[in-house]
Image (tube, rainbow, N blue to C red; front, side, top):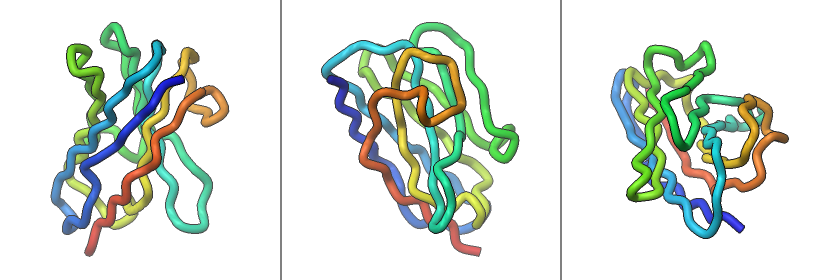
Length: 120
């Protein structure tokens, strides 16, 4: 069983930045992803990275603004979010698994989510 604890959400003005963290414990995995879910919408892919290696991928809507990274020594992944927009408002989730995929069904464990609100 992998436990994921997210932190770093909050309220920020449009154009601002936030960094989300996801601390992992209790198991092994090779892929970590970030997803988000806005009210009334389905959960959507944001970013994915290999836990060992440099491969990353991003949704078109965040490309150039968000960066996924990880600190293996701390077993923690990060999502640096710059130039935030009101449409980025959502609950953000980290998830881990062993498939390189943008689908939510490809991930085995999920964090509890952290709220990000971007005001205009």
